[in-house]
Amino acid sequence: MMRFHSRTERAGDEQLRAFGLNMGQFDVLARVGAAEGISQGELAASLLVTKGNIAQLMRKMEGRGIIRRESEGRMKRLYLTGAGRELFAAVVPAHEAFVQRRFDALTEEEQTTLYRLLRKLDRGTG
Image (tube, rainbow, N blue to C red; front, top):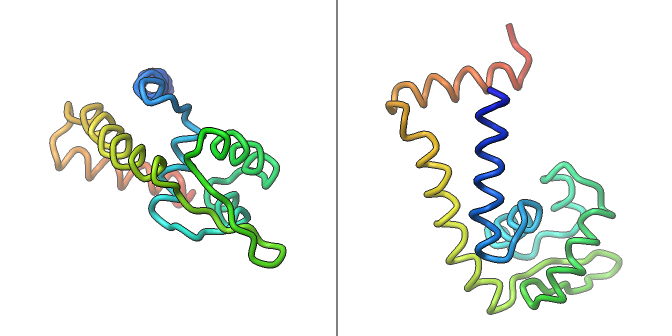
């Protein structure tokens, strides 16, 4: 399982580099693109990272003109820019197709079984 994860992660990193992104930046782009207006705190919690990590990613992605932050009181809401939406439209389907290809060796039934078993392990149930 670890070997599959490691190989998939390396190949995924390479695939995302073609778009000028790393995995952290992709996660932010995908999450903000799916829920524009999300706060930095909500984003950090959903990605299981610190607010400091999100702030650092935001600075880099704002510098590239992909994301913009809008203050709402003490909260910062996140939105994609026009360039960010174009990147989202290109990279998300490409990455989803990449992930799907990694699982194409399994039948649909096997994929369902794998999902069920991994979910069981993740929840720590018997």
